[in-house]
Length: 315
Image (cartoon, rainbow, N blue to C red):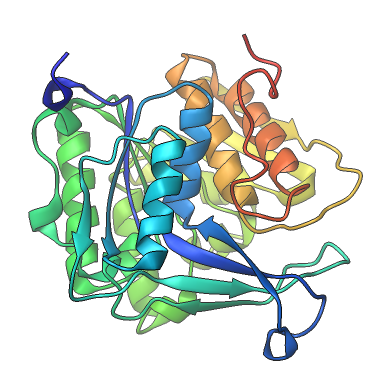
């Protein structure tokens, strides 16, 4: 089949970043040795779904620099459809630093992404053709925080997909430091959530975004505003799910040792999305999300723990 006619199962849009992970358990200011990896919430989800056998189209922009080249090589090796990854001569690839936390706590993270190539994405980068026929569009609250043009792009893509009857999944993935004000963050993230079929906030995120004190209230808030299904991440306790099939809690998956918490939420999204694409009920989707998230926290890098179907025990 002509490549231009190939329809992905999933399309996502976001910023891919180089990740420099500390090799020493020290404050970042004192670290002298780093290991290179990859980062980016939407990229993590794209890689996870690709490893589970789905065709994933990734929309982004990279600087025409060594960091961008390394990321492009990584994405090609993971089998992503990169027709709509643009190389930018004027703006650099973003990167981030991450400390080593030996006690399982959240590591220290610093971002260097202001003015990056991906922050200059706009409505002009919205793909046409085959990408408009993908079964599912996955978005997070990070992309619209990068710039006004990125916000416009994300809202437009969500509205187009929902209007066309395609499934839209949304992970708030709050990054308060990227937003000018907390009010702007809440307004935009909730606007995107109202355009999604499936909303997947963390419990703390949901409380901030909705003003509700528990998972049931958070779910009610988004269901009343247009979502069809809501899954609230509860950390080690699992996930609360609510939708037309009913409500309940999918128990957490015990982990012997937490190595790195970064990327766990993206792994959770991979599990939920893959299960929904297979037609499984929301309860089983939340359970798979828990399983993938639990696996991811046992590895240092954001993508290293994302499983293949056999590693997840699937046929």
